Image (cartoon, rainbow, N blue to C red):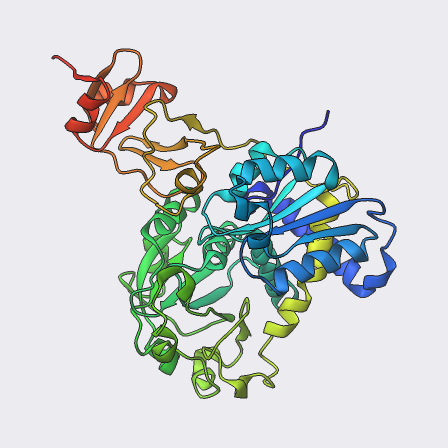
Length: 442
């Protein structure tokens, strides 16, 4: 039986696969009505535990344009979830005979990964909490690729709520993979999370540099801008002071709304940063395109809608051919010549039975009946680990070994020798002793 492919993260696709999907999407876009035989007889189930307009409709439009059918559960509060049914049980039932592919949106980070572990068909992540939104990222990359002709070396400003926007988190990982430069212009207090910055540094060699964004005028007036670049400091020093990089050229501005449903500050919208026609008149922005994942509130002025640089409605429309290509590939109706990703990320079990993930909105905390606990090792020296579902770093005070039942300081030589599948993480000595571990004797 062939391996089921899921799209839980943008990392589930190789760079070559992404570019080939873009080529196919470009073909589909020439005549969206010409492909109704590609996935004939296949059924997509959209399970949306959170509100959605564009993502859900574009997936359903894409499937129907490919000749397939759609089952919609757009308001899961009226489904068996309201009766207490677990996500795991839901996807097992739906993937049993109802559908050939599941598109899932869920408020808990890591939900798509857990769903993929139980489903019998491919699972596509349509947004899991503030974690990732890989298909939106592919749509955004596709727009940049179409408009600019390339992705490598582009300078992209990400503005607004960078902390809670799952779109931003997926997008920065993908931009880094393609060698783009990222200028972070956050609303104050909504900076890019540290775990995202750390992953960019460790996996993509992207170094954060303090940015002088004064040339961006009103857009960056209230922000502490940061420049994330794959260039090393000694390379930057060839053309600027590596400690403060001046932003004097921008290819795209990606604006995001305040994710008030995640941080609870309902009044933020009234004082949130705003992109206007006057802001876009700053010299570095004159040739930049304007993007937004939508929906928007007041963060983009209406006077920009008719500006030829504003592409957010075109960006939304392009989601259909991109998702057509994604669905066709995952359903086995489109064969790519590009090599897939080489390996899946390995998760190690959490042996203590105590959930070490600090993120209370992680699926490992919210899915009680079918709780899965797993971690990924991000570094051995120094010892660091992250939740295998939401990717947030696990706080480690002490490290235990399930074989010896001893615990050690996290940065000790003994801790570095413990096999990953024998590791246990403790907040402190009290927790270690309560779980039956003892201090290692010298």
